[in-house]
Amino acid sequence: MKLFSGPLSMFGAKVEIAAREKGLDFELVMVPFEMKTLYEPKHPEVSRINPKRQVPVLVEGDLELFDSTQIFEYLETLKPEPPLWPADIRERARARLLEHKSDEVYFPHIVRLMGNPEAAGAHDGAARFYDEMERTLGSREWLAGDYSYADIAFYMAQLFGDRMGAPMGEAHPRLQKWRERMGARPPVRQVAGAMGRYLLSIGRKLPDFMARLSA
Image 1: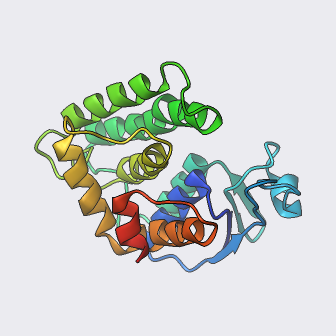
Image 2 (image 1 turned 180 degrees about the horizontal axis):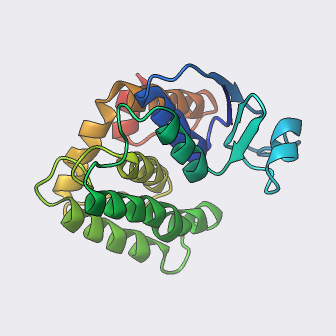
């Protein structure tokens, strides 16, 4: 099994964390990346497999997959234990929706901040999502009851949000404790820590919580 990712790929990091949580044996291929040129020129295998020419891409024998959620679903079927979707059918549905919302509702605000730190409405949109996630978490340890891919997805998306100037605030104490629990998990610490060390190597500053993972 070979996973193509990138040093600053939020979506690639999601898959890598999941694969490490499941104890899968895989080869991690970090495609070339530079801040000025980003992922150009594209890795030839990534370009061949994914019409969007983006990581992550997973190759196992003659099976070739792209899209972080599609890859995760394959990994979950391939190795059901330990599970990364809740066992309860309703909680599983909620977890799947939360993972989708992290990618498609929250993260677009952060993408806008990458292009313009003052993008109209982006900070407010991120803050509203934090409010929603604070309520969703409530008194539970994890977002959908059991630890799941929903937690992995939002953790990595929020890591980028914090870096781009949309941190969680005083109104989100439960989420901040949740983030500390996430960072205590060895696969999360390994993947997020490696990303943090890469950022430090190119002179970028890290949020405090990420700096602790990267030490």
